[in-house]
Image (cartoon, rainbow, N blue to C red; front, side, top):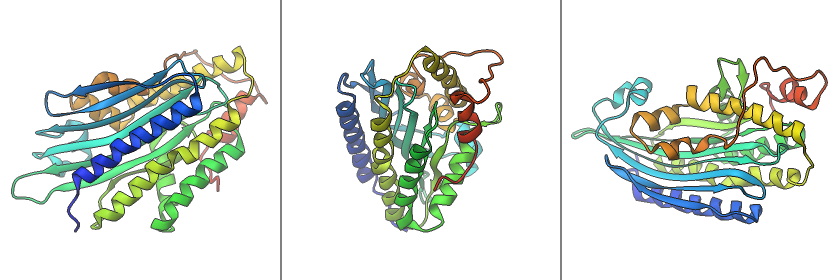
Length: 302
């Protein structure tokens, strides 16, 4: 088994954060990221970057963190009991983009690496990550493009990778208390720790590097579409589903909060404005109902 090269992984994550922020600033053309560098008392720290009130992006957060601890939080040991009694390092890049124009989807991406160690025993390590898309108004060509990029990046690693990680994404980003997908999915993987460290790392790099290739063409297609109060109100209502999922079901959010992480950075995924409405039902045969009937369902897009 290859020995994990922690510094190599960290260098990639830092470079990825820089690259994504630079390209998002260029396409937004109005606002730039502000950066918070922070240290964690228990060990480690990070760089939190947030762009607000942009020309295209109402809020975008792109965070890097590298944290350490003497014991894994409860959410992690419940998922993997063998981690109990081990110290750990967790690092990664996590981003969420909330556009202003309701015709541009919200998007999320994450790539991460964990290593847990105990004296006298071999380290336990794994990669995880993926990206997913949450449209407010669905466009078939956008969904096909998004999943085509995902499928293409997976292809060099095996014919079974895309269908497996697509299904995992569909299952993971499902709002159980609403019996409803969060969006149209993408890729999700966790616990990736085959004996070949380099292959696992290469796949994670491909996911991180291809995210903007999947997302930015959709932004370009939709950024000049005219919208009004109806579209805005529907966008704000649908954003409430995003909040519900992240606070109730997301393992990364639970891990961050239970491990004493930096709350502002963990919750940067929350949209800046959101609303709830009791008993909302879209009008039949409306663009809003089309989202539910044609896009918020599990299907093969490519």
